[in-house]
Image: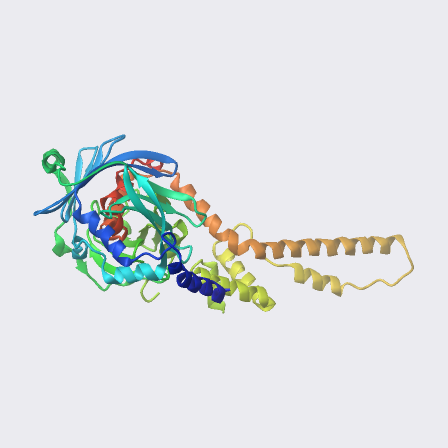
Length: 325
Length: 163
């Protein structure tokens, strides 16, 4: 059975280049272009986000200048919630007069490209092929499908602007091809005439008036550690990209944070003492394609977060072990 | 093998491994006893209200130990035969139940786990507790490389389930 599957996969790869535009295996340069566009293009637009039968709109503005990257994301419905990013610093603004400042520590992230390891991981874990061409928000796009080779992760389909590589639409599908979440730009402006002052400067004064309740301590307090916890059953294809002891807003003590990546989806594992447990519920919850599963392990709370199906986060959470156990 | 069965019951095996163990279980009837013993142990440990015991073999032995009555037809022997037949039927029914529970056991276990966690879920929570984890995760998730800031919409978006 497995050999049969492997044969089909091999045949697919062998046959794919023979076909014309659709179904063709994607040139990895295209993926680089998409990642690059996300960081280097100036754009401002409104998109619709659909998940769990809900639909809402949000606006995103991105500017890249000599000072680096500035970005803002705001919800256009309901209570005001927004993110403002200035290079590595993220301000998280909630409607309830509270600003949380998050420092980004991961230097790899500021580099607007996919790392070679990430590209090879993508290639190992997903069949990546082109699908239809479509017109979205007035722009010509090319669809690309990331089809996983097992059911422990989701299928991703993205529509990239053919000129700039900017993502104009993305959908996450489960193993039955049912939509888990989707976002689509309904209006978008690409180019140099995006107003920086109006977007970033105007907003940051608003947030500056709010004292920062939780300021994440600076980079130095995050340390790579060899700790006594291990994650025994990470799904195949996921590799550990980080393991740190770090502070988390609202937590009295540091948490241990593991990150695993398969090139496209990430799984975070948090381990903390139960002293941090403030009325947090256990079990499964979700935010679109992100699933969260919390369980107690002795005197510790284990929380797994990832853009993967529920059973994957549950499986990972169940496999967290104290070393020597 | 015993370790694998135990791991399977605890849901600690990956899908492929679990399938392999289930295959072995299906093929080797002697492993059934181990499977049942482990369930019995776990039931007793958890002080479950109904303990899963296979009494079909005990009943079969008792039935075999019963003397076979060789005698002319009489009302009494008729009753004995009816009793024996109904006992055999009960044993078969019981075996069927045991067999069924073994067939569907492994598959239903994860579903039950899901339902339980959903039940906990609907008990409500403060939304912010989750957001901290989401933001910490998204900082490092490779999906942010491809989706950029738009992936934060999951945190910005309103969530019915939070309220």
